[in-house]
Amino acid sequence: MNDKNPSDIAPILKTVDSSAPIAPAKAGGKPRLLIVEDDEEIRTQMRWALTAEYSIATAGDRANAVEQFRLNKPPVVLLDLGLPPHPGTPEEGLATITELLSIDRTTKIIVVSGQGEKGPAMTAIGLGAYDFVTKPAEMDELRFLLKRCYHVAHLEKEYRQMQETLGGGAFEGLLGSGARMQAVFDSIRKVATSDAPVLVLGESGTGKEVTARAIHQRSARRDGPFVAINCSAIPETLIESELFGHEKGAFTGAHAQRKGRIEQADGGTLFLDEIGEVPLPIQVKLLRFLQERVIERVGGRASISIDTRVLAATNADLKKGMAGGTFREDLFYRLAVVQIILPPLRDRNDDTLLLAQAFLKRYGDENGKAGLVFGADAVRAIRAHPWPGNVRELQNRVRRAVIMSEGKRIAPGDLELEVASGPTPGSTLKEARDKLEAEMIRASLARHAGRITAVAAELGVSRPTLYELVDRHGIQRPE
Image (tube, rainbow, N blue to C red; front, side):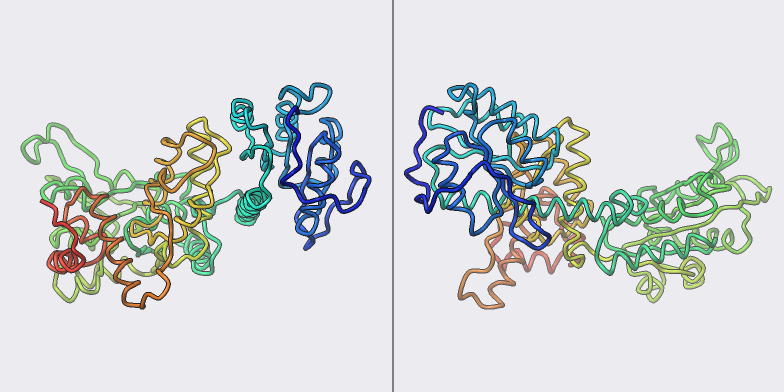
């Protein structure tokens, strides 16, 4: 290009044959880097400035760049837009970006552009380049950018490997690499082969219905219906009719016979979510159904035989319910022949980023924004956030980020997360805990528009305790 200036590049150490190919780095060797630059002096100096950290291949034009790229398979490419035969224009460099990404779309390409060439650099970003730097290149800035590129490339590689390990990224819709989730997968495999009732336990948003569907899909009933009902979402006066159906004229408004959810699940699987919210009179009828496998519609007298497997789930403590008389002990033991406990996201170590990458790809594809990546700050924010809403919260935040993002990289603001700063040096353990507690309360208040009941439920505390915490941390009480 017209403004070649190697003044900020490390000095030449010795003359080398810069066009000679370098054998691909062995596993465990230095990261591979391809430098595409038509100015031999700058190319040589950049190579020597970075050779201690990277296994470097170089090229001076598009054809040689493609050849070196195929040979070395570098995860990162440093590319000057001004290449022969037209070094004064960006067309050849832009064509190189398109060709390299057509070979491997996961490659991170850093464009080197002149001071007055922001337009071509932004065009390059639109074609899929990861980032750009302007000449003269500051080596500290370039090293930092390269380090970030390799970090993101490594995360993406781990995710792809996990996809292969878990058979395409998921186990019947579930994703997880840690020991706790692998234990969940093992339990699903075992219980799917029987018709025994299963009780799925876990906090809100941990994936209880997805787990129930996984059991159904792995069972002999997979070709039958999967009928799910959220028992907490149905008024107490309607839940009996919703579950068991009704005959015409059974009550005001019953203008026709209607099958209930249990009957609809005949030959398949019935999933009772939030089973702890079922009123005691309905618990009696459910118990009879589990024992005898027959139901009677509301207003009817005929006994109807039903062949369905029952799965249930709750985020409530049913043993407390039994002690308090709000949940029948005999129903609990009928439902909980096998229990599967889903861990909260905060206890799943690196699964958080794995899930975030999966959601980013899904929603990026759905919204015509394929190729989105998380910026380094976003990765830190994802790792630092406590995720009180578990997988559902993560999924919703990533979906919003895809919609709101304007570039190729997702920032913490797109996720509505703060940049993770870590504990203040010199702070005590109590101070760090207080800071985290206050941040969680503020975030939950914002998510629920100040609704104290919803915030208390999400954070697992009572309303009086929440008010006490709000006052202690100097947080303004919602009106």
